[in-house]
Image 1 (cartoon, rainbow over the protein chains, first blue to last red):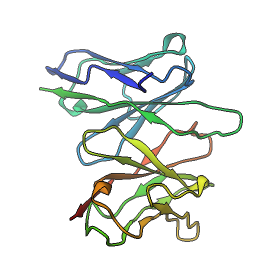
Image 2: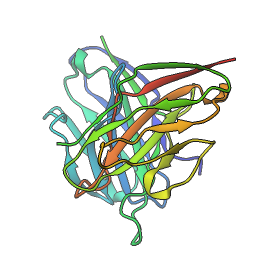
Image 3: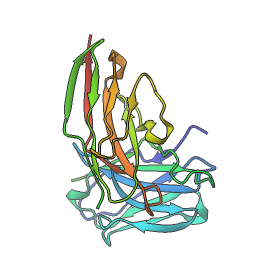
Length: 117
Length: 110
């Protein structure tokens, strides 16, 4: 297990196209987060899964965005009808919720850099 | 609403000099604060968290609830400390989601 992986690492698309990103968390982690990072900014929360349940979505996540985590393993983030403003680094992170600690360390993937032309 | 502010976008020091990266936050409850670091060509990783009260790579950070600050300090900076540093906050019913500051790029000159 080499940590959180994301695929693809880079995606260039034309405005109006749909794109899908994949995140594979650390295998025993039950929590999975998606963040978006634009140039010069810190990561911003998009959505969160505990196992297969999507428990929270940011208002940053417009109707064009959808995320899934079937079977509580890998997750996908789809953006429909991409816009130039969607250009950003999309980060995935996972953590393990234990009975003892509520906020455990999040392990981040390398990110998927999206460029919308 | 929760917010994290890192007032310095860039910070440059010489090797061996003390360094302090500032972080201020706003949060209505009892937050949990973290420092994350991203070295060149590497992924974002946890440096330290306030509940651990540890010194990691010579860095320490004390949560000051009165001043709502969580500044990161190191008495003697090393060249390998050059990186992007993010202060982050979580708490309440946020399921551990992190609110990040804008980040500070630390450059340690030889």
